[in-house]
Length: 63
Image 1 (spheres, one colour):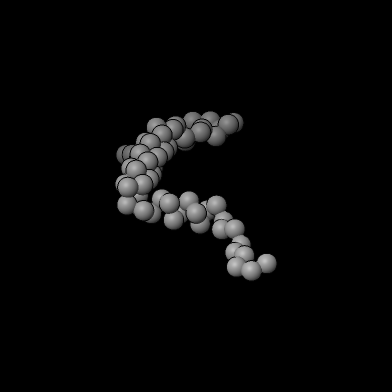
Image 2: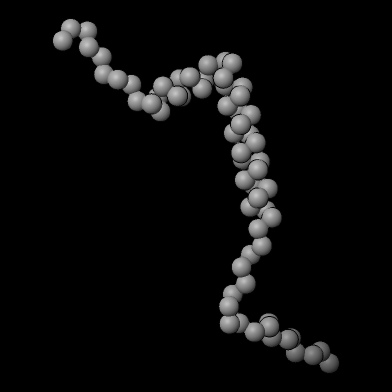
């Protein structure tokens, strides 16, 4: 029971691994591509049209 340490959390171990210099560049690029790809995908989505509504009302003619 001497010198027992608790096991570290996997998130903390991954964060420590990902912030060391060689891996940090790769992690940064992967995050950059993920954010860029997701924002491009979100920009290409078409908004859903409401169901059951007719065309918008026409404005009154001007005199």
